[in-house]
Image (tube, rainbow, N blue to C red; front, top):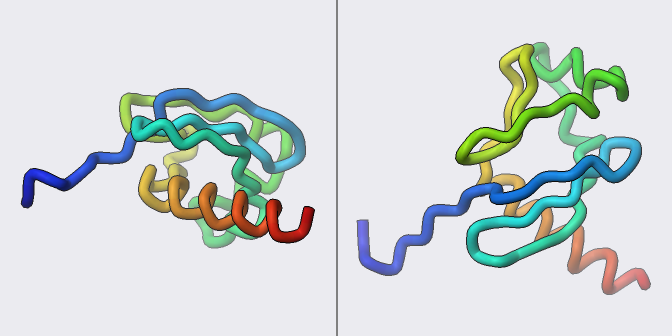
Length: 91
């Protein structure tokens, strides 16, 4: 590991609507991520119920649900950047 390695953590998470969560990361990036297309596979099945999806928890690294589903903070960070860039291109 080099001195330039930055550990990405979710510092704040707030439900917005549908499958969207507004995230703030340890490097200062803030944006709304849409996870609708990321909910697939057995562990994520309960998240298809929007009322269940809304009830995520935040630990010291990322967001997760009591069914054991979570998303790596690095994945959420990259997806937030990608979706933010796409939104600015469309808008």
